[in-house]
Structures are given as structure tokens and as C-alpha cells.
Image (tube, rainbow, N blue to C red; front, side, top):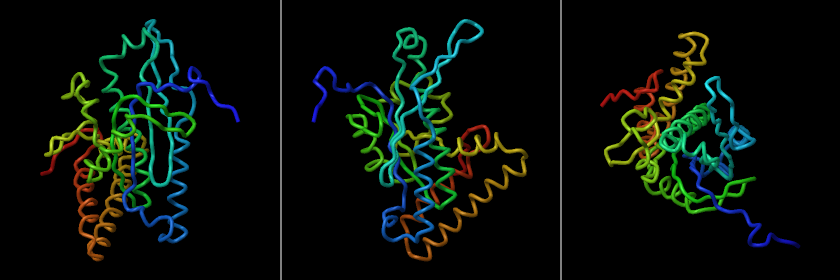
Length: 263
């Protein structure tokens, strides 16, 4: 058996990392009926195949500049998902994008979570998570680094409700936080991603008609109400409260990706 010498070992690099956990899946492996297990497995497979390839592609622009397309690394294990994004490596890109990269990452992360949340909601699942930044190795399913630990702690110790808590490591570097529509702040001072608005904006933007978009939102609301009623009848107070929290924010988000508080 051969191994890499120290100078050949993969180095940690600065990455933005999202850690997601699906709520209500503790009984998935042994307590769910087969069709529900199959639905969840198909969801995890869909997520793992969302984006693959190089980290960046540089597209020449008509004005002589270049656009950067970020392709995150994605891993799934058990009922968890890890997605990470690199920072620009090229010196010119670092200068061009440095100031607004945290905002761009918040927007891209919210879009990714919105897509996953939409798929999860269709099979009656919510999610929560942590979004952080720091040293990380993430390739070919291997995830290691201090940034991963921070994202996990945010999910497990801070998130509580179905929200994606954003680390202070990112917030302190957001240049113009009042103009980032994918960030919300809760009463406890924690910032989290407005993936609720991203769900609505993406689907309504892609819908063929206003009626189709309205039908999509109503179908999700019906599913949410079913889950709340079922949990309340079962005496599951805390899980029901999480669904109610999510419903309030889903209802309050509109097609402009703006959160309009109702309370």
C-alpha cells in the first residue's frame, strides 16, 4: 500500500461550506415504509447529481471582462448534505470579486437550498443547516476541515428551526448587508438565508402561467397544513412548531425574493 508524501497531500483551501440536515428522518432507515425510504433516497441522489465539474469556468465578456461561474462540490451521507464553494484563485479574479464574494456566495447558497427545500417539501420534509467559511478540503466525497465543524455546530446548536444560520465569519465580510435580499435576521440576532423567497422566485420565474405558480404554492401550503395537523394530532408539539415557523416564512415570501414580514 502506498501513500502520498507530505508535500503531495491535499492541502486545505478557503471555502464556503453549507451543512444541511433533514428534519424528521431519524426513523428513515428502519421505521419508514419502503415507498417513503425510496422517495428519500431518490432525493439524496438528485442532490448529489445537481452540479459536477470544474470549480470555475471563465466566460469572456463583450466588454473585455470575464464572468465566473461557480460550481460547488456536493456530498451526501446518511440524512445530511454538504455543499462547498471555492474562492477565486486567480489573482485578477481575487481583486475583481473580493469585495462582493460573500454576498455572491449567500445568493448562490440560498438558490441551492431553495431548490433542495422545494424537492424535500414535496415528500414532506424540512431542512435546517449552517453556512460557514474557512479552511476545508472537499473533493470526491471527502470532507475535512475546521469550516465544516463550524457549519455543523451552527446547524446542531443554533439553527433549531428550519433555518440556515449564516456564520459571523461570512456576515462580517458582507459589503452591503442591507441590499442582500437573501439574508434575514431573527430576534436572537442570528442571520439566516432567505431560501423561502428563493423557492418562490425560482418557481414563479419558471412557471408558464401565473395560475401554475399559484397552484405550486397552494400545493405546498396544503402539504404543510397536512403535516402540521398530523403532528398536532400525534401530540408532537415541537415538530409541529417547526412546520408552523416554516409556513409563516413561506407565506411571507414573494416572487421578488423579498421577505415581507406578517408578524
